[in-house]
Image (cartoon, rainbow, N blue to C red):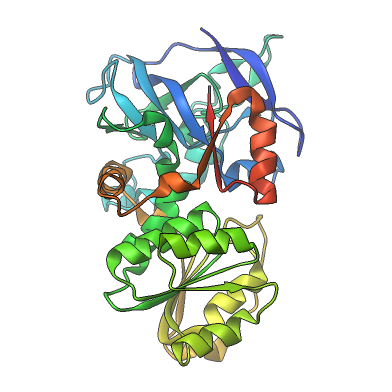
Length: 365
């Protein structure tokens, strides 16, 4: 079929909305008509080749839409179902079988390979040349996407479908980092470094689970003001205030938990150094390959720890419906983060995201 999709053809080049040919779904694939798709920092990292995914490429990995067709072996989805698209996993490695699909042994190949496991791409360009896809097994910057049962999560049909796509990656990453990975107890303290969409999802999650000291750190005053509205008890502008000293002042020594969402080695060092004894720092910021950080070994020796967190340690088929129910109840108002754009305005949406004007752009094909 003929579809419209945003293609990046060269490193750091603008997206170009083109007409592509998309194959019909194979026996284990699902064709989804995209209604909304979030723009995520990882899309920009790959556009700039921070992760070496082959070009030309259709990006997009926070899609939501309506199932249009299913392959003969698909059992749990049917045409007309509403779905949120999340990350891909193999389903049969040890970690997948333990309920840890974010740590799938084939995670990079499944999500960043640019091709199906057999080396094919479902896209052809107008000139007949191959365009890579299968990004997070969806490549949802387009009118349609081919996915699998594993990364298409059926949701209720009485919620605004165009809003739900970011639950598939960025929002579940921030919320899950708190709820599933760090698991702070009621009355605990947490510092969230970076008040973008991931960090603010973490702030909302921290409030939902009962943290009573929630410190948001950023350099954008409007984001910090929104953090206060969403549950932060304290805010720090790191451009004008020494964040480490201020956190220690607020908490009389340090926080029990911290979360690094900026992908900056300097900020990760602060996120570790602000911990009390013992304390846990979660890392979700997606830095370019090879980025390194320096830590004081004695800081870790006294019971502190650092742990990386992929996709919020979530099992999407379980966690995404939970987040939707929290949203229904008014306890997770992530709709306050979004602004909608037409697919043809993708470069403006990306620019607004990178400049900090908009927290979570959602494209509507």
